[in-house]
Image 1: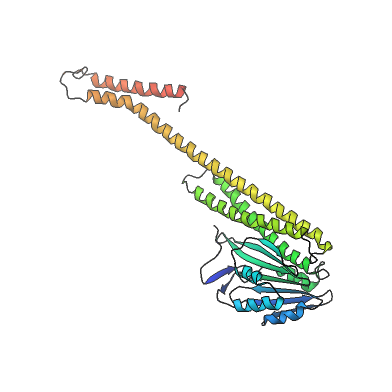
Image 2: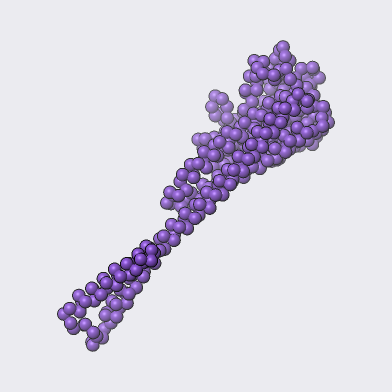
Length: 352
């Protein structure tokens, strides 16, 4: 069910217009949105040094980078924005767990963006690096394609308080979109759990355990992404920095509540999967016991019959009933009496 990457040559990218294929070797795409309460400037950047001009302006600047393929471009962007060399090293390392670091003049945040391809039933993973400065936010994604289009539309249309707030509120808005995606992934996992719950006592082929283990691995992976993010948001709430304004604190508290809710739901899902595994194993064990009980009953019934036929099948000349005309009928009647007597006894004992 899960998978962090597709084939080596292409990646599955979720966009509003459908799935597209992006070559792995394509250069990163840098877009810039600079806004004030009165105007919005939106453009695509070819030279990362152009961002330095906007960084020194009084407006709010959002720089978004799609892709980590071209390291020299990212190095130039890091130098123009004044980022520490360790920050660039972390940006290029896509195996980081969610974390937050305060460098004084900017805050560096790492989060995992998750999305579900319902056709292939795989979870797409993309690392997001978020850098918050006094009047700018830089978002750097591992792959092209992001869920931030609603935030862009809010900036373009002047909806809400986004254009009237600082860069810290923009960072909150981006993290809020990431957290909302987690809810959609957890909803999908909950649907899978409910579907397996309906099948757990009806599966006859014994292949449901593999699906349970696969889904449980997905839940564990989701848990590893959510729990560190909870610490990140909690630190962002309590961090002593001039970059986080007091007016943004209520929104950060709301974001923290959402992450805590995600943590509770993923824990519930993990407990449900563990319970389903126990129920499924118990069902398989009961089914096996039932089969063994039937085999034992047949073996018990045919054991005396095998003894009788074995005795009378011996090649001796002088044996009881051998030369009697009613000997065969008497032996058959005796065997039938034994069979029905044993079945009645088993029924009386409630063994069958």
